Image 1 (cartoon, rainbow, N blue to C red):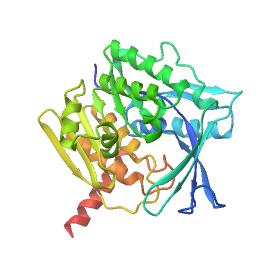
Image 2 (image 1 turned 180 degrees about the horizontal axis):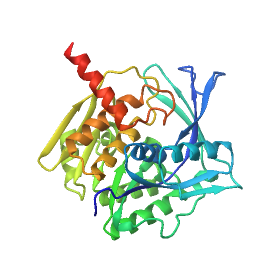
Image 3 (image 1 turned 135 degrees about the vertical axis):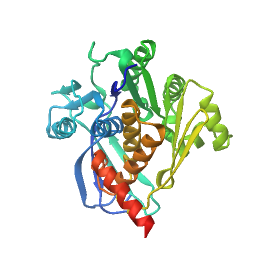
Image 4 (image 1 turned 45 degrees about the vertical axis):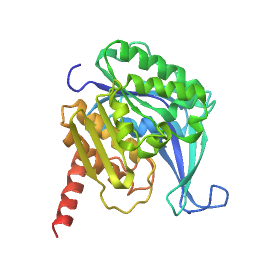
Length: 318
């Protein structure tokens, strides 16, 4: 695979509305802001494009204001959108989120039977052997999206392309046997695996973290990233291991931070960066992402990350 291959995703494209009131549980009248461009694969790919990667998004939006709001953002940030189906018979998918004081959150998704899960994968769009396909397990929970994702993943893998996977192992996904099987296949085919610590708890409840990492490294995966939220991240590849401490920031909206981390990391690796450089920048991107309301609003360019890291160095020196 040549340097700077295309990074592609197949999955949901949404807009999101965020409650400004905590502890309301989406059941009381409150002020919301939005529509914010969203969808885990879209957040990931938007950040990858902002980091200079070549990208292609495959998914669906409605021919409505919400859909055009997302497309405008993706296009402005350099995401390839030739694979996005604009459906004039279905509306764009939506999500609503509210937070609690302990950092947990409630989501309501309106995605089934919207434009989000009615799209086609254009034939010939991707040079399969020169593609890194990112699979977000959140998308595998939707039965209609699962088929196109798995079909594309198998084609990329067979052609010599690479797969990266964010297991995103939510409890509701784990109760769906077909989704669980799809996730296991994605993980088995992946060169890059990026689970969070909570994912490891779901996937390997009887193993310690080190044992879970070792089990993952026994698979096809060459690089394992453990996302620790505010505590930072761990990157492991063979005998190489890097620990990245979290950055202290004011958290406003954590949704999408893990996708932002992943988009930064894979984009930099695709452009020839070292594991340490990619991990350093991704760790900064994930921290910066939580400081702005809206899941894609915290995405950042390399210059912003450089300024952020310089500021953190100055803080630690004083």
